[in-house]
Length: 121
Image (cartoon, rainbow, N blue to C red):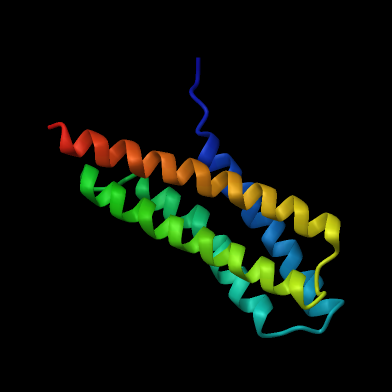
């Protein structure tokens, strides 16, 4: 049976949703600054997670996951800001926030587990 990496899948599909959000913001809302910020941070999460798959050590893996954690946290900030200035529909905001918070929880749990495993060695 093939093991499915939930975080890898979630972050990949999240990046696609962020890409669609970027195009909505640029084409429909004519927003060209914040849209680039959220595109960068929202798509970086999955790319960094992919990079972490081939980390050179457990410490390197933890470091890369910590960077992914910072990127998803930054994405949450941009989502909150876009929502606060009424650039997001409520339904889209709620969905993206739910998904980003779930990704954040998974990444945080992974980091805590790796930290624990590194300390018991």
